[in-house]
Length: 267
Image (cartoon, rainbow, N blue to C red):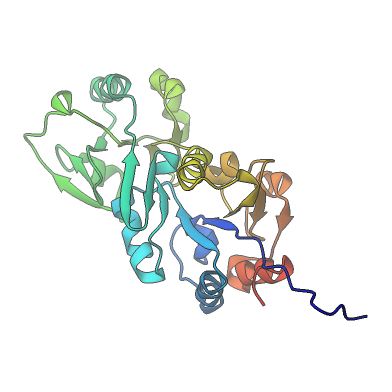
């Protein structure tokens, strides 16, 4: 029965946070962004929802995706940086003294290293040994023979060329967050995106219950929280799927669009 004068309640505004590799893109790392994902992002914006990237990348490194996909809101640096409306609100560096101690230990034990001392899309190395050990193409490397890490006033990431079985030779790693995305080296970087998401929501004066996160990998585990909706991609790791509110299809099978339609966030 139709009720005269009844009005349809507007959909509740949601705040979407998307990981990049393997979530927005079809591979981790790399891949392409499916057309269905681009279409979904546009539809979410048209519905008045808030859309944001949540990445371990530096804010500067994330720009290649933010510009291409129209994002002007970013949780970057593994949760330590937030950008709202295209303006950086803050980026918190790693513990400086611990990072310097780690680099000193790397030099003593012969582990090649690199470092990011600012919001930069590249790493700085003193020589070519890091490249020789890793042949890494994820980001550009600046060779600066005169670089003195002891004079750095802030360190945002440290890159250490070591195999998994060699990690125990660097005991300071137990006091710093780090991730391994490649066999040849590790990223010493913040690893709790939920910190940045909460900071973002607090800044926007929005309730945590309206957060929706999408992820696929190990560095997304800490942002899958019980206080909000957590969606794991079908290609995601099993540990993440176990924490998820919902497991959608693979990223290369229109998984983001499928989930958003499933929950009625888009038509």
